[in-house]
Image (cartoon, rainbow, N blue to C red):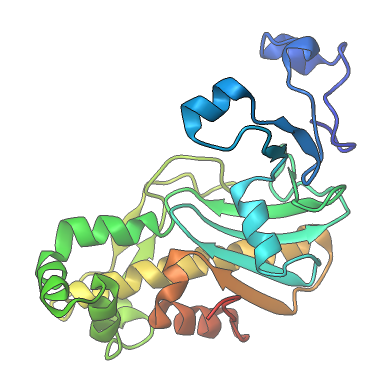
Length: 256
């Protein structure tokens, strides 16, 4: 799509590059507008009541920003999900990363200015699978989430993890120039434990999102004054606190 939130004109070179035609594309419908209703066949296949209206939705992160009350350029919405992102919302079309189109927002005629970490808080799941078997078993016996035990373990780890740093590029993707390297844990010493590694993961993700914060401010020319944090990772008090520390501003959950 282009800045007008419409498909490119038929003569545009991009159609040749991707061997597609405008007539092959679906109709663009603004979020919140009706698409149709559930047919008899679809009702039998899904159990959804026949005639139920189908409404156009927005992308997952756009809906998350909307649910976090992130409808202004001065509010940044951090998503601590499998893919970690930072978004602001504006009626201005701005490419945060060159040649990467702005995403359409959940509000019609608005855009999300997004910076993304493809393997974001997925890394917490990766850490649990590879290194936190003891905590997972203990959590089961206590009837609590494994993250609760990991949070307790990192409370006594100082900021900076005593020199241990994590570079959060566990998956290839489009990033800022000069940082197309592989993921890395750097600075190991004999003082480091699994708890240090876990905190280094949280800090590495927060610093990368802070880089996205700075990039969005620079590209849009709008200062960010508020920080909202959602997604599964936002349940971690440790992740929330170190995010507030790294961003040097209050970080709020849009939910209890």
